[in-house]
Image (cartoon, rainbow, N blue to C red; front, side, top):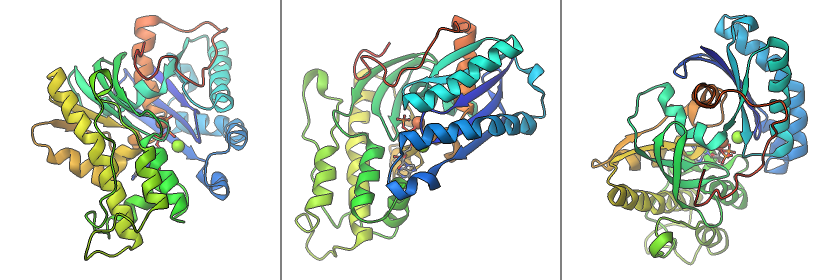
Length: 337
Ligand code: ATP
Ligand code: MG
Ligand code: FE
């Protein structure tokens, strides 16, 4: 089965063709970053307008790269939640039109589950595993029991990890998007220069939850206060110390989750899974079998949507034309459907 995957939830306009949920035939990603740089963040109005301009050429290029014609497609998968409503609607409406014209089903796909599925396009990772979703909008520790079965066991109670990277970078005057810039700068810095505060451990049901707002504020407002003797308050040192703290805090909870659920296998996904220190630190935990998508499949792409969409179409069939998008997923933090 050839499935077309459409992703337009944020600032990437992406279309891909994937065979049987496993083999990527094409993966076109058109990023809008340059249009959002002047505002140091994604502007929803600009994002949806760019998607409207780009979606047709990106679609055509994806078919051409795959070496197929649109009549060869068996189904369409499209991100329908969560994300910017106006942006989601562009991809979703495009998918409906295409579905009507080609007489093939379309199915809405959850973007977060798709991030966690991305790794299966390159490797075969057994279920269950602990899914670590580290992106611009979400930070979650999950128990993944199948492509469509995920339970959230811990989540950020405030900022997402990617958001913390972006905000810290902005306040340090590094620019946008901040994650990659902090990653580069941190490589020249000393991660032990600053002892930034982390989250104090919470108990019971909340023991796997995490908070980034305290760390973010500490880095932004009190740069000198946490300086270790003999170290320098240089930008690379701040970046490296922040990055290490942000990642270590999360990995500690992840290790606890692996122990409690007795699942020594982890899949990391989302934009921050591209981070150099994050990847190294996770691999250093020898007791854990750690998996990552390659860098292009960590950030938003259509292949992960097409890949997961194959399973959605197989298990649930297509959506009705009355289906719509959802900016948020209800009960996202704990009782994920
Ligand atoms: P969500 O998936 O939650 O809806 P999103 O789609 O915007 O959010 P992604 O595209 O998965 O998120 O990831 C973007 C985030 O990843 C940004 O916050 C960006 O700064 C961060 N990021 C990308 N590369 C790196 C890196 N090398 N180091 C740290 N952060 C990074
Ligand atoms: Mg993005
Ligand atoms: Fe994403």
